Length: 208
Image (cartoon, rainbow, N blue to C red; front, top):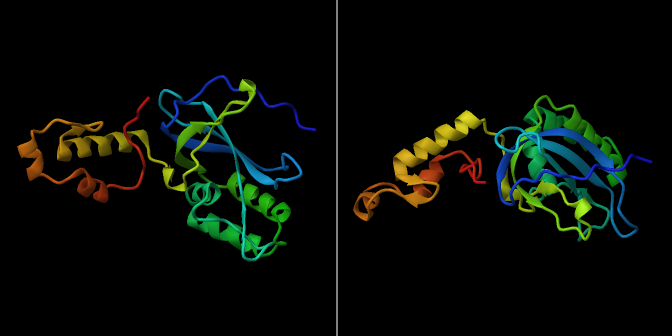
């Protein structure tokens, strides 16, 4: 039987977007008779004010409703989005090859996925952070957003700052506050046009 999990004491403000490094991935037993095994992950915030703060979550493999017993990793799920950025293309494809060699069950797939993450050369990514709402406060923890579109590739702090500065120079905005007059703003590109030229890294405002 595993040792009890530590009670989390440090929390990232709800909705912050943080760079994360994966420390551990492991097959997790179902919590009750009505649930399935999941992939447990443990990560730490990599930089900024909350550096070192743990983020813990359990990610699901989906099962087809049309064809019961047919498993898949949804592109619109947290697991699919996390794997997309934690693994390189070569690592991801090697994992897929291995999944095709084993039985199509969660019990067989989860160790393969956990092994791919554990063996990744640079398992880093970026996500909006939220907290669960347990009945017992001792079980409260940071976890990944439920929205797959709020999980992104890692971005170095200096690159993040450079993108912010470029955005401010083009739009005259600082964290959403307009500095230009209406007349001047109308002559420049809209926020949507600027964002369309920026990489998809999520919220860059470093909000607290």
